[in-house]
Length: 434
Image 1 (cartoon, rainbow, N blue to C red):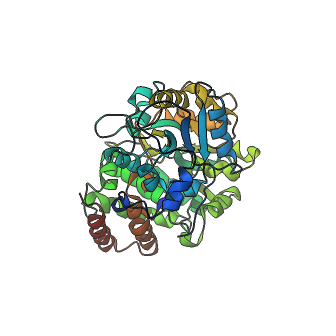
Image 2 (image 1 turned 135 degrees about the vertical axis):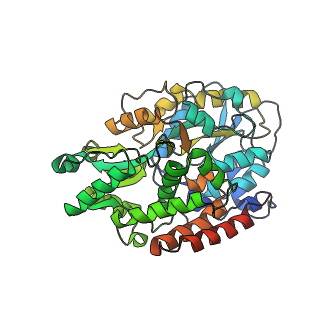
Image 3 (image 1 turned 90 degrees about the horizontal axis):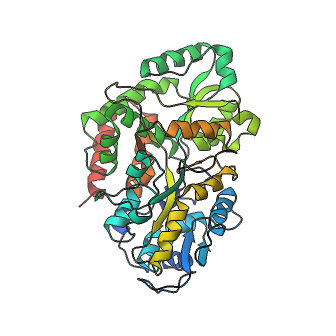
């Protein structure tokens, strides 16, 4: 699979990690050893206590853009300990993470909340960071940073919500209002079709964008807990609850942009810009290619409620942050750095970085945020549960080798849901083995 470098806000873990499954977690260092050596370039192999410069691994290489600039600004502002920082190309970092963690990892390194972080912790590859966890983050983000034993294993720094985006000027011209329920979404979509618009922009040429649609439909219909259990391989894909998700999706497909498997998400954004599509469900990174004047015309709403007993307070909002190795060479300094990285001062680095993300710490400054970022902050504060997107919430091998082709098969032929779910379930059972 081709290497993939995402823009600043994209779920960058996906294609770069797609070949790594849980089964590969403990394979020998011979496989991918070159990557591990690159990642560990700044380390000296010593671990487990003592002093010396604090080793830090960052998944952004110099010159890679605003994401690198943001990370460097954060670390340059930390003066309480000497740092040895290894800045590594994003994909190289992702591809080598398993071997890296089994070798001589940095004391503190960038990673993401979700399934893989919990797997690393369960297998003793990263440590408990409860002593460094920030106080000023939402309970939903804390929940996403916590392992099954109740320990925090990840210090969050920034994230980006998924929502339904639209241009205010188009909606005001046509008298559209954000729908609050599925019925209202269908009614709005029919009105848009009558006005000559494609109601919902849609693209899945790269395989991952449609995962977001499955995620939100499953959370709206079956709730966050069921969704996370399904992603963890703890529920059957032949459960009638899952069939309801695909049946609901099938009912919405006539309102989606056709021929989606030949279109990138950037092309779907272009359709939205040209006012050919009425709305588009995507992450906040949708704005990455928009001029500031266009960003001021963009608004969003959360995906509508489908079941009133489930509600609409769970979303995908991938969280980036930092982990601590299982045996840091300088544990005290590692703790100090993690406390700083999760703080409001550190989060304020986003206030000038012009990245379509928001800080997770409520005390971070936001004075230079765009109006859209300010609304994203308010929106995040209303959410009770935050999922990390399918590729982060499940086994990456399952996401890439099973779910990409399964969802694309569904898009091409949405009438054989039973057969599709039987196939997914059989493959899931071969991957999620205890």
